[in-house]
Each structure stands twice: as C-alpha cells, then as structure tokens.
Length: 76
Length: 222
Image (spheres, each protein chain N blue to C red):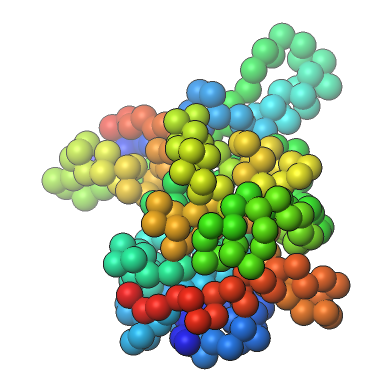
C-alpha cells in the first residue's frame, strides 16, 4: 500500500515562503493570485497490514508538528 | 558540578556551550546522540545550536526522536535542569519539553548579528544574574527563529512569568517578541539567541556570561 501525506502550515500561521512565492508570481505578471500556501508531500511505501491508523500515528509523532501544521492522508 | 552537552550530527555550537559551562566551573561531558543515557549525576544538560540531522523534515524534528533526547526528556520530566540554545530550543519544542514551535523567519532571511534582548524575568536560575528589564547584547544566528504559539499558550507564558527574554527590536517575527521561554517548573530554558557566544572578551561582548555564572552552585542533579 502507498500513502501520501500532505503537511501544511495551519490556517492563521504566517507562511512567509508562500508569501514570497505570491510576490514572485505577481512580479511575473500573474496578477490574479490572491494567496499562496506552501506545504510538503510525503510518500510512504507501506508493507502489507499497515493501516490508516498507523499513518495517522506517524503524522502525530513525527511527520507533522501539530502545533503549527495540519496534515491529511491519502491512501492509494 | 556536572554539565552534559549533547552532540548531534550537524551540531556546531556544542564546543562553545561546553566552554561557557567550563568557565562557570562545570565539569562538562560531551554526549553523543546515539547514547541512550546521560552520565550519572548530571546537574544540567545543554542542547546546543547547529543544524542537527541537516534540519531534515523540520528543524529539530529528527533530533527530538534520537536516543539521547529520550534521556533528556526523562531528565526534564524528573525535574532536571536543561538549557537549549538555537537549534537546541527548536529540539526542546519538538520534544514537547517546551511549548510552541519555531517557524521560518518572517523576513525569510538567515540573520546573523548581535541583537538587544530585554530580560523579561529574573525569577529563574538562568536569569537571576540579571535584573528584569536589563537590556543585553547577544548574537542570533538563525533562519527559523520565529517563535510561534497559539494565543492561549502565549498568554499562559506571560501570566506565569515564563518569558525569559524578549527582543527589543523583533528581528524574525516572533509572537510577542519572544526570544526565550521557561518550562512550567522554570528549570528548562529555551532561547534562540546564543549566550555562549557572548561569554568571553574575545567574542566582543560578555553579556551572556551571567546565564552560566548564575547556574553555578544552583542546579542539582535529578
């Protein structure tokens, strides 16, 4: 099984990298971009028997820092 | 008086921190990240600055899972003393010993210069050598020093007098100008500025010396 974990800064947490990308897009003439948030994608190759609960535990313990980040899990 | 300084792959302030402890009269042991126990009778643990594990995933995230960090957390849970500077502060927040997290600097740039800090409380073993309100010059050198915690946590830190240092001119976007905080039992200090780099005349300033000098004779093994 494969799992894809998306990690994003929580809403309300300033994302200066996303802001810098937004400015750069504006400078290139893409003037319809109102906001950019930058995150991470982590792909996991999982052995048979691994469950979504396992992936949730991985996110809570390591993959995301839930003080500042939210995560979502896509099982493939 | 015994201090232990943790060394991770990528630590680069470990020796500076050890020298600052030695100048204050501590016997210092360097402890490798793969060790699973601190030396017997350690009175205080120093978690140094640097780029542990290349800052992979998040600053401090991998270090927080290392064998030695489990021993450091257990030490803190027993009421032991610890100081985390820069990457050490990031690691202590990742372990949950200290609240909050360190984000990318609001200006996105790595900042390396001496800044003015206000001593926000003298009510801790680390800050008792200052008077509250003193302004001291201490170097910062970080890319991810933007302290963040939710409003409730920040209020609790302020209400409990657990903000140790604030920036007089916020360089990195830290919430409430916070540069350093104390644990709820006031025995663990985490701070982004480097007091160990302001601890010798050769550094160009000695305003950080008081942190280490104040620890001498005050900390006890847990």
